Image: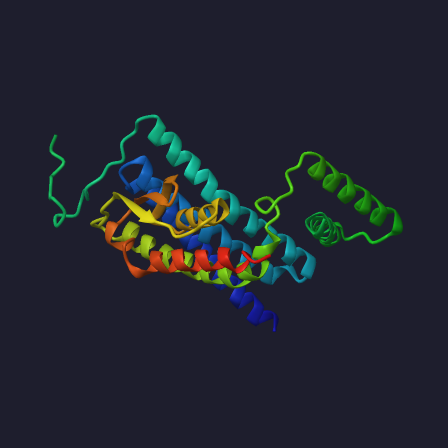
Length: 114
Length: 161
């Protein structure tokens, strides 16, 4: 039973770590602030969510599970508001989103050779 | 009045779950704290359908698991884009029409869009949602329409109360 719980726990924690790492990689690879926000959104929704659910299987106490799930709920309710505020601030600061696919030749195909 | 009592019960349940000490002294502290918090909320007149949306309780029970699954699916999609060497992004600003009637419904829809990776709501003007999308062909698909429909149903479920 403990082995099974550990296995499930590992699965969730590794999944969370994967999405967090990929989100961080996305912040480095994507071109502008708006596209990077999409990558950042991965870390705090599924990244943190899977990590915390994985920890729930290690808690062994229903009260601790409840507290961990409260943290997930808090993140899921607050992170879109923070993301929206960031996007709004960037637009307000007259930062134009980098539109038209940068590496997608099917869309306009304007090579960024300025 | 129902809303006031509901908030008190909810706060006290949260206190019980988080405290872990069930001696009379601590329970009395809990009762006192919750009462003061509810009293302040009533005095400030911030208790209404928006701040304590109990009428949405049942709808949320089915909506949240669905949303979680959608978020997971689009996370996989965005992860695949980031990890692919050619970085096949196609950023664009798109506009959605939301069919929600209330501000609370629009708020839930806008936040659900933002929570789903690949789309961020940057502005709302009545029923018009301005959305920044990482790949434009991912947004006009049926998924967003389904989300719109589900949020409207969630909002409408409590309209009679």
